[in-house]
Length: 68
Image (cartoon, rainbow, N blue to C red):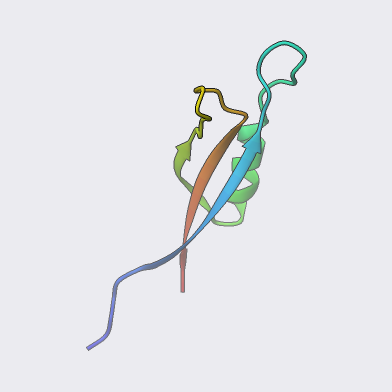
């Protein structure tokens, strides 16, 4: 009996950004995802972590690709 279940690997990409006075803009998310997509990674989920005050300075992209 063979195991036909697909296997996957995952990685996270932290994209820093600054919003507000004296801060830089948003990261180039599209270029980052396209670069990883060319290597076989697919976007699985995006998380916007926040501090206790509700602000955030990064976006975390969770990527997935099939192995084997």
